Length: 380
Image 1 (cartoon, rainbow, N blue to C red):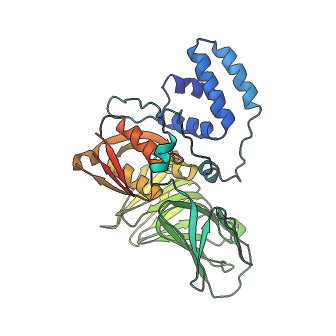
Image 2: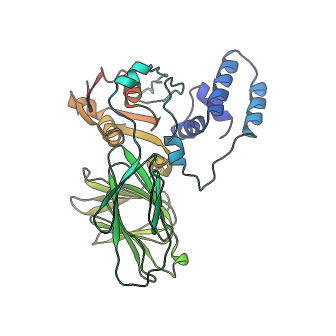
Image 3: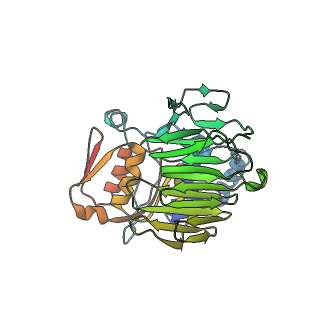
């Protein structure tokens, strides 16, 4: 991260994309948090930016940047809950009001019955038995290993014609990472289910099914598998992949399937027509009339969930609460339907408690209040 983003944060001039970068950096370590607080104090006391930047260079030399292999999503989600939030999360509405930090004491955390999401999943084996995968637990067989935070299948050759399937189901309030036997990596969001072979047949097309939910795929290229194609099926849609990274969102309670290409090439087929996507394009398949449209999107924003962030741009409150309800496993009710249509821009960490996020939204003054009863949230 560039030093100038720290100064822009202090001046409250970060763009939404810069806000994402800053929040990621801030949450990476206690050193970053301590350094930021020191810079903030020095900056307000009128010390020169030259002296501040000298400290930055010293810190930068000590920073260990996680390698690509590191699952940054889990790295962020594993961070402990911070009781005193010192980052300013910004929500914009019309004239862009700035939302200041909020403090939450221990009693608020204890009384709040809603817990933040974490790594957990249910693995359904080929014999129909279910295995609970969650932090702190290990599960190992000859074909797979899980440490409770990820599931990795052992690569093996399959020359047989029979395919056996496993299912990985992510409940509300969960997320999980799985590496398939061909080396393909899949990150699954809350309330999702993936069906896949425990091993792929050599020389044949590799096919998996996103039964419902949201998943980010980093596909092992066909050149590593004797030219075997890779396909992802979802309801009325099939995605043919030629070694690439992309995101599919196909929730049960939504009437559209969104496929976002990060890099590489995919072909979207809805049974009537096919469309090629190029990086930064998103297909929108309307399940009601089976029509498909293509548009350019902000890829980082569309896939920020994988990196431990909620990122919203001109998103109405109803849609925001739908996203939050999956991560915090809650039900949301609006006392006034008009509130649902208020639109916000903002970037939030998935590590925050639901109460911290709701208080931040309340501070915009565009909602009057909220109430948490058991696992039900009412917004007034």
